[in-house]
Image (cartoon, rainbow, N blue to C red):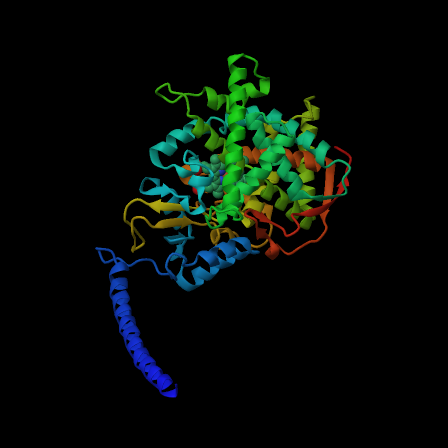
Amino acid sequence: MASMWNQLSLMFSRGSDMILTVILALTVLWLLWSTVSRHFRNRSARGLPLPSGHFGLPFIGGTVEFLSALHTADGIRQWTQKQIKKHGPLFKWRCMGYSVVTMVQPEGNKFILQNESRLNHLNEMFHVPTLLGPESLLVQSGEQHKLSRRHLNRFFDHTAIGRYLDAMNRIAVRHFTNHWQGKERVVALDIINLYTFSAICSLMTLEEGPLMNEFMVKCCILEEGMTCLPINLPGFQYYQSLKARKWILGMLDRLMEQRRREIAEDRLSEAAKLDALTNLLTATHENGNALSDPYIKDNLLLLSIAGSGSTSSALALTLYYVAKNPHVYDEIIKEHKSILEGKRRSEKDDSTLTMEDISAMKYTWNVLKETLRLQPASPGTFRKTVADLEYKGYYIPKGWLLMWSNQDTHYNPEYFKDPLKFDPSRWEEPPSPFTYLPFGGGSHICLGNEYAKMEMLVFFHHLIRRYSWSLVDSNDDELIIRDPFPRTPNKTLIVMKQIIDF
Ligand code: HEM
């Protein structure tokens, strides 16, 4: 028995010697191959180097670090700063299998945002084609995107915003009556979500009620799928998100069917005559063909997702910053009192707002802009190169992603003095180009940015006429997390004090 063990152990030790030799030989070969291939991979045919940076493990690379930075307090700013410190303001890394070059300086942002002919909009990484749909504006590039955007632009240009103002005013008054009146404590973000979602639903004349609430819940579930692994199996988030998409498409189908009947029978309400749904159902392409149902549904879904969480986050965080800066509250009050006094002097109705009133809310807009500087809803987005590119002496191969980012410029003292301070007065001067990018830029610049501005100013006007507020827990700004949009840990929990409506 013992000799058998001896023989076996001898065999094993001979075997393990052989295995070790093979492993050693393979390692040397791999090292040689990777050094030589890195040398060639890191240089283009013209000898330009790739940007510096670190790819890390195949496929995964920096994905886990990046995704967890997105979800932790102040994480994405710190992640960006760490990469800049290690590799400079232009660095390569790997995310979900893609080779990415992130650019954080104004010139880099300009290069990406104004180079659309050589870059495709890319959102595959966040499963946008499957979750938001292949016809969604976010998935399209080039001519196709230009055409699609032309149809949707009509609902978000200056004239259209003017048309929505009365409806927004009504939504805000109803919102404060139904959800704020008589409350002492409010989780601002949760309640504001009802306002911003009602505003989006008004584009389809869908009133607040059980159907709207269910729609809102399904949109949240769908959105959560965008930053998780695409595992389509029961029990996984992605599976739930795809189910939510199915529910939403069914609901939109029924809404469209009902609206088509109302159009055919000429019994549209005044609101429905003006809304985006009727317009999309009656619009045609240049060749006279109607817009397809998948196009209408994917883009109504996109508006519902893109237009609600970002705006709620900005509003709830503005309440947070204003509560921490009482002089800002006083300035806002002063501005709105002056607007109302002006209206009363010229005997105008002071319960509604006009576009002139919105333009007069300059200070309030600067306050909102300051929130969006410190806490932009999106830290940046990606584009995919459709050809080899050269930038600042570096080579960027075809198929790589470029990521523009506001995570350096927004906090850089070179562009914003004392950058971590909440200071709306800084907006008396315009920012340098491509340093302030809360709404992105280029051809994919946020479609709803003017709409969001009007929506947020109307909200503030009605809030400031009714309430003052203080924070239950005045957390530090460093605790603000992304979920996926920035919020304080307690979603801006505030104590309300009713003031006499002025
Ligand atoms: C404070 C509020 C908002 C912020 C901070 C915000 C921010 C952004 C950003 C950063 C982008 C990506 C731009 C890019 O990739 O270059 C974007 C795209 C978009 N946003 Fe907004 N957004 C807001 C509100 C809204 C609203 C209210 C709507 C609709 C009613 C909307 C609709 C869209 C659409 C449709 C796109 C895609 C545009 C395209 O790909 O052509 N957003 N937004």
